Length: 437
Image 1 (tube, rainbow, N blue to C red):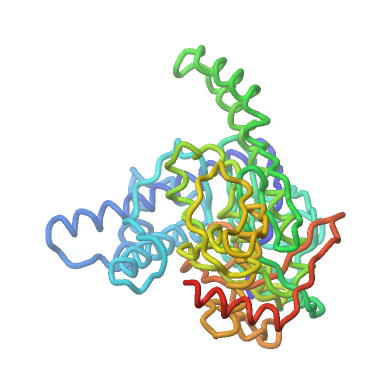
Image 2: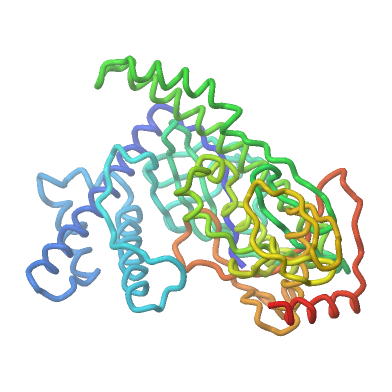
């Protein structure tokens, strides 16, 4: 399976200039090749092949006075930029024809030097790992790296990235075997929310950190300072970096929280079931800021790939499943309820339910039923992950198709109370739910 490992890099002044040249050259090759293909399409001409673009926009362009500076960077950087453009077009065409699952993908767009993220990709011909703990990048030099953990194997590719706050990162893609954890007999359903970040089917609640809300006051102050600076001035550039760094801190804290929570859930459960939320639609409502602050999609993605990595089961329950309407005790469907109703009493059996806990239990029962009937769209739905070589897309903007669902289990540090449900009870519960629907 493929995994991506990210590390912070600290280039010196000359190396930052070399990386800036590499970012610019890769961007120019991308834009030149994209422009040629757009012109050919507008003129009704055939699709321009990659070999022709490589000859015109890389090999011959280096010999011209206008593009002679392309020779100042590694040829791998330029060729990889063209390959990335080919991958973008392939994703676009596959999305049009239905070969690519998930949301529709638009055509490639031009890149700008003002984009918040600048990056280059390299294969093993253009970088190496010397014994001194640095990373050698062709025509850049030996970069100082903060190794937070060891690489499990030799990397197959490297992406050098500069974010909007001026930080540099090295992202390695590594082919490694799954790290299968010992089997467990527990499983969990997850209900994601805003008042509490997640509620597990055993009653465990993970409080919502609200990192953006907590940083709003400082962000307001920094953004006011930015708005007062004259456009194009050096002071405005400094103020912009301060705002970007504060946003980066918020994103880093949220990502760290997601990783810790998802890892603990995967370690403590053999199977995890999550409701497939329409996050993009919820992000256009009046709750948009809170929805984006929670970061549900990133969290579910971490659960998904960690389930495959550690030999767990992960499955998504359809968003049309009425998890908040069905009584988890008797299976009676009590109808929709507005969001302000956080507790309700079943009209059939009289059980008093916490809305979120009841929904998590229903997600658990439905997830079990989906896996039992073999309809779970998972990479390891047969519970055999780790017994054979499993292909998993590398994380963080690695080119490829979107991942499908999977199954996993849950557990949060310091919270060990669980509610064990008998198998026979679950089967009867599933039958009642089916009849209620």
